[in-house]
Image (cartoon, rainbow, N blue to C red; front, side, top):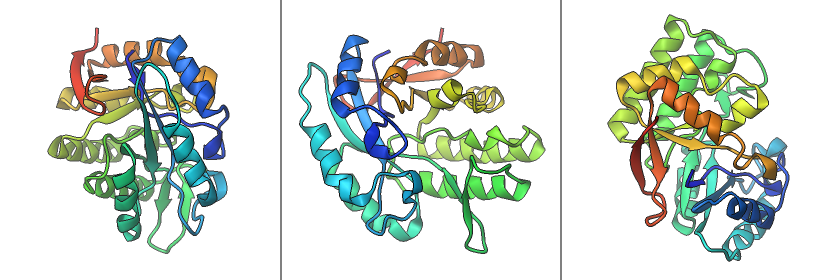
Length: 255
């Protein structure tokens, strides 16, 4: 385990622990790099029900930038991609170290939207999930895409889910964009990472980034033994963070 790039603190609105506490935990566990990725806020506080308020953005960024330790501490955001806000995302990307994408909400044609965790997903919902995810991945904004298999938490891996999976994997391959095997779903018992998804990803040769997606300090390093075992059982190719070149990756076959 070289580090973690998907980390949430108390700033995110549904996590706990200070930036300094996470840095200390990373040092105790021998990390070579730590990246913070709070959910990117909007000036109008859209999606703020469980997100960092916009007024806290500067506090968060300055807090991360002020940390001093023997390894790189990177500043990032996790983004719910909306095409209408692309110019804003680009401005944010210019001043931070990286962005990661994640589809947490499904936007229906009638203008309504809901969290993927709030209700079971229909066949139409998972098709919309794939469309949104592929559009986000194609934006060129992201270092990797978080929990791409989260749609399978409430939908069986049937023929429609296989088609959605293949569409997401096709896009990842075309864009050379790594996908994330996420530890938060494991720790919370939410049904992801999905073995069906990652067996298919391994067959297709889509590499994986391992992340804890920690929302508590004690969760920062906790899931990595499981994630490595899971990746090995699926035959996934792991991309490790190259600590000498932040946000570049090197391949390591799971074993």
